[in-house]
Image (cartoon, rainbow, N blue to C red):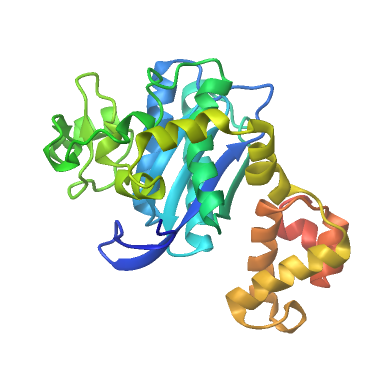
Length: 305
């Protein structure tokens, strides 16, 4: 399998991209999707945000209180920007429809790289596996890209209404956006729902599983879901001791700025601080220690004053 591939991205550029797992977690006792309209809106936000943040969706699943997406992106920052935008847009939907401005406050929107063949295969199988773990039949569940895979149908000849042909009013009513969608290949079915094969990179998933649908299905069935949840979601957000936390943060700093954290100016430090706060489990005092900042300054930066 090819873990990194060359793809044309939504902005028209051709780049070498790699896979990332994106998750929205944290609503164990609350739900985002309360009816079919919500599921439809969340799925469409996943797709619209991918265009905005220049990533490609491989496969996704939306359930009542969380969502998982595998994307192809040029770098981690793009995948994380996508996760943040999805959280923001879903928050706007929930606030507008239900008047709830706080529901998404405690939701973690995180992206992690899939850095080995096994990691990629397990993540791509774990995403549709969420439907099974929520008591649904994955073959019939409508809010996932699973049904787009291994269809042996050229997506370019898929039958459906082109999103690009919608009028401005239709676009606002059906797609819940004012974005320019004149160049998108997305298609709608007769119920106005997006057809997954028109926006999922099915070719990537299928080559990961060597073009063998049975291999894909066996992997879904054999996954240890608690282990995958820990690997993809909980472990990246586990609080580390200062020594390990400093190493992880410094490694990110070196990738971003080619400097140690102690050497970067304050504007770069603040940008890195906000990113680390979003993607890692930590505390205000630990952030202050690692970034060499006053606790009040850290609190103001992350909005906790």
